[in-house]
Image 1: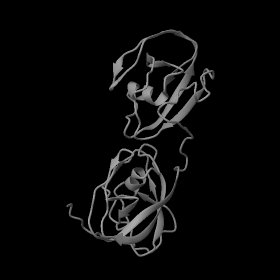
Image 2: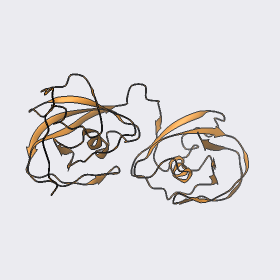
Image 3: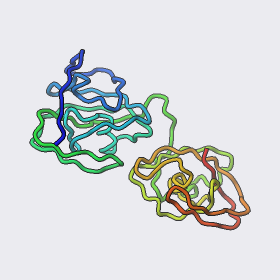
Image 4: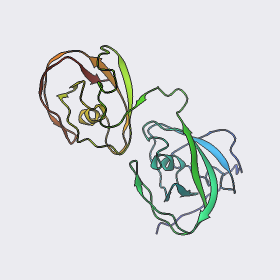
Length: 228
């Protein structure tokens, strides 16, 4: 069992009224929000480094708030976000699980907990279209939009087993997230945001093996894309 240590914030508050900019190790205790019924929010920077978490859905008060939000599917590590939380009573036991690319740990009795109550994109974050790991440019309805740039969010915990065609330039019916893994832009555990440039006809597409994904050769195809 992992030993835990309390720390005390210099500004212990029962309720945080404005989002606190937090590193990914911040928890209720370090934010001074461990009093019964406390609520608040933190800004989790994009691309943060995960902290330790104990529990699933309800987390020990010394668990990383930002990482707990990723674990339960509220935000992605790549994108970050403003995460809202509330303090709740401690529990006799916390069960760890592996979810959304984050593994939380089991723990026994702990006196205070929290739950994530909401999340919003960070101010100024670019807009993107959420897709799943089978979505191609054609399936998104953007295969004929030559010259346009589009951003897509690939969810964590994906599967890169779908067939794709090409290397660096891909046919428009190749699943975007799988092609992004092949291109080396993201991995299946974490997912993330990718931006594509819509292209037109290519005389041929050459397959290759990269980053655990093997793409396939294909002759001429009218629609294609490349990653920015």
